[in-house]
Structure formats: structure tokens, C-alpha cells
Length: 109
Image 1 (tube, rainbow, N blue to C red):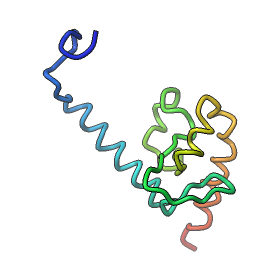
Image 2 (spheres, helix red, strand yellow; image 1 turned 90 degrees about the vertical axis):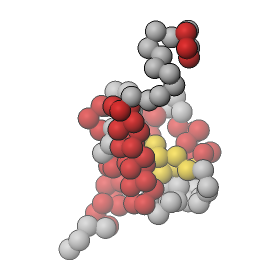
Image 3 (cartoon, rainbow, N blue to C red; image 1 turned 90 degrees about the horizontal axis):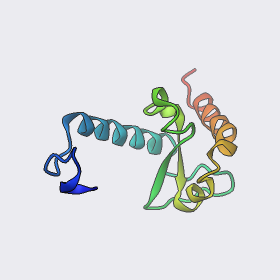
């Protein structure tokens, strides 16, 4: 049951709550890209592509409180992002270390 046949169908319009989340996500995504210079952060890659992914280091579904925390995001090109799918936890520590190092490098003295 999808679309008009679904009991929660509201005429194809997003609720205000959902729209607010979409804006918050877009702002988070942009902040991650800007921090990373719009460059893939996978070691050995460093691609600058039109289609980048803001990857949640700790899963979106499990860590609600970290969904919009810039430190829970890292920029990956499409190819590198695909390498992490279904293996996200294997990359957590490495990605967290990359973000932590970036924060130390750009911290004001």
C-alpha cells in the first residue's frame, strides 16, 4: 500500500515536521561537506565529485541523538560510500579518528 492507497496519505504533501527535518538534514549535510572541503575523506581517495555523500559514521537508525551532529558525518564519494554499505561498523573508528584529527587541526589556538 503506497501513495493514495496508504492510510497515512496526505495528498502528496510533506508534514511541517517532516519538512523541518529535511531542512535540518540539508544543513547538516552541507556543514559536513564544507568542513571536508567537498573532498572524499576515505584514505587514499580524495576525489572531488559532483555527487558526494554525507555519510553518518554512527548509523542514522541507531543513534537518534547524533543524526545532525557534524562530528557524526564524513564526506565520501559514491564509490567509497558503496564500499561501506552493510559494513558501516567496520569503518566507525577510522572515520571518527579522521574527524577528530580535522577538529584538532582547525581548532583556534
